[in-house]
Amino acid sequence: MTSAQAAVFSVPGTHPVLQSVALPRLVSGEALVRVSCCTICGSDVHSWTGKRQTPLPTILGHEIVGVVEGLGSDEPPVDLNGEPLAIGDRIVWAVVASCGRCDRCVAGMPQKCRFAWKYGHQALNDVVPGHQHTAPLSGGLATHCHLVPGTAVVRVPTGVPDELASTATCAGATVMNALAAAGELKGKRLLVTGAGMLGLLACAAAGLQSPASTTVVDLNVGRLNDARRLGASLGSTEVPQGQFDILIECTGNSALTTAAISRLDLGGRAILVGAVYPDDPLPIDAQSIVRRLITIRGIHNYTAQDLAAALSFFAGSDASALFKDLIGRRIPLSDVDSWVSESEKGSAARVAVIP
Image 1 (spheres, one colour):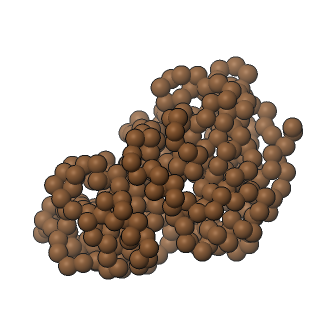
Image 2 (cartoon, helix red, strand yellow):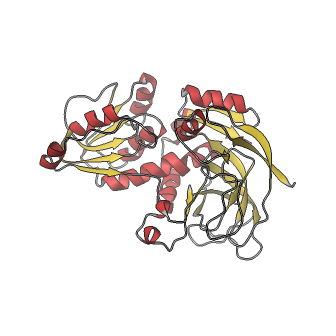
Image 3 (cartoon, rainbow, N blue to C red):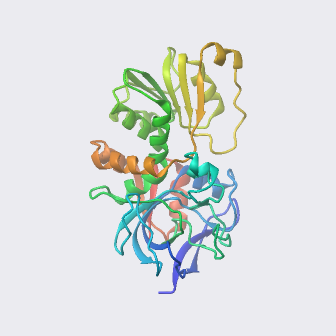
């Protein structure tokens, strides 16, 4: 085999088109992965509908799981534990490959590396930072994905299905990062805005820390029912009266975020996760924030440790079966119109594309 099949996205407002893309010649520290499953994130939909800008042409899809099919000839890449990868390993990897040496990496922000390579977000002709070659197969909506040096890799535990392993690489790991930023949750009153995959994961994972209550807000009543099954104390279509200690914001909706922050009690913490596409600016009552001692923190992407934590959650959680049920249709990569249409409907928390 000399080429892969990939859904190449070139023009905003149009669907990706299935094309042949040459398989790479791997260098030291690289791997070729045969994609087993790519779940479609909301940001992918925002990209092809034109709501979110991305370099073009590109292969979208950053929630990916697959099996190692090829390795660079010299030094193979290693997983998070320092173990060399081998042909046949089932793996996931961080959405951002990083250098590990720049000031941002050293400061614990590898997802903001000055020489970052972001899977599912690179143009086909982008040159890999620090190298002289391109890596067009950088997205998961393809039969293969090319892992470049600096990619943090985690082996998938036995028993974690592909659909959840792929989801761990975006929603799962991001939620783990957000919960770490939120701090101690035991005995706290938690408010989660948004009951998509981010919010539902936040609800379930936070429950392991025994908050006093978990309130989830979403307009979709069906999703609120899912939240209750995952441990939410209350599901509501609007921010309820009362006060909360912690806010995990997963929608990016400015009006909802403003209302939610206003409900935080003294010393409350707002963790903003969902604002990853353009929206109205967030109005802030600075005096209220100051007087109530409110902390507001943004979370974007995650570290390799967060990814490992997400996989561990799926491996050990009683909620994994319910999360698998939240994945919608499993649709072949070749049926582009179907997986685009299903993703745009938004009726399922995720749609799984199977090469």
